[in-house]
Length: 185
Image 1: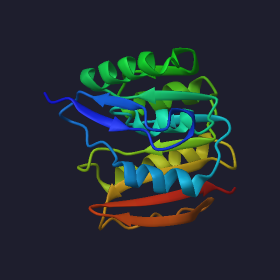
Image 2: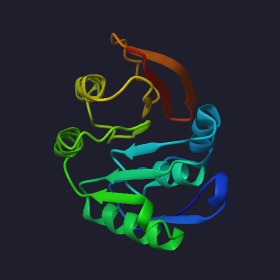
Image 3: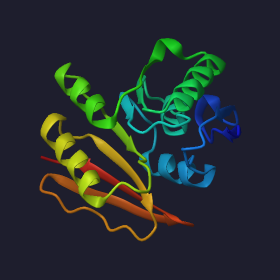
């Protein structure tokens, strides 16, 4: 297992390092994260980093103004990275980490009526479009109008066209495509 060092790109933790221990993760590059967060502007509210890995999206969200972040990943080494990064940044009081399959995590959050202002979805590349579409449908059914969803996928992936979900922005960065959506209904 290799240890990767990543840098946060803005906000109060700008240039601070976080680690990734999992060989299963594909951390988002600084360029991609910086482009995403520049598009989102200043953050307020609660975020979900559903396939957290190192937590790069979630810690970047905290750095740029999110008040609280829920991190979820099913991989032990990702959880280890998340805990170490939270301790290093001294943000343990602003996060909750769950180690669940993504579907069990969503079921848990929805059963507790937890609402998000931002949701970061950077799943394993092998996830099919139908799985991603089902996640989006569940967010549409269980979250409030205004939720912004950031989806990171392989470059050749198409966007999703679902009633109540507006595509705000797309971007291509090397081998990755970014889609930013908002729940509008």
